[in-house]
Image 1 (cartoon, one colour):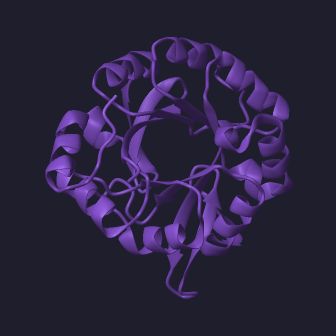
Image 2: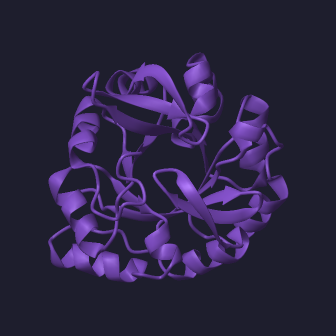
Length: 254
């Protein structure tokens, strides 16, 4: 059985780690380089670094910050936010990223996924999906620009499409559950992991160790991602892993 991963996420805006609720009410948490070093020591399996303002404002990739962050890590690092072309991906991988996360650029030009996976390998290409339930249409739709812009793309159709185009992994954030700390969106995640054959990272809603154990018991996702509960030290990664192990969930220990 594949061992499950616990992944902290650094949402970075204007050089500082921030966190909000349902993509709003952002508050500053701290320095990304310092926090990355801390998570490396605390047993994180991987780290995701998302520049959440890059797509919206169009500013340059934070290569210096990313390079400094990568130097502090002995675990895989995924970088996302503002990636527009193959040159951007090459620059990030050269700066120390192991994977890149694509969202807005992939939705705007799905062929970009195929180009990127063919050039750098599927294992380097993670597609981030910010999904929100639309009651009137009774379906989930994909959002871009840090959750600010809704697209016409239905989430369950999109995950199949990106897999066919060569994506190696999905990072799925339930916008409805994000920051609520009431548990993950099992319904959405089950439908997605049943629709594809590539690893799925679940994001949005993790509030305590029990939520992660329930996530791995109720769905077949490969990893659970969280931000504020780790940033605010409400719970340690080791506590989450120990709790999951006690519930019979096979966990990866770095």
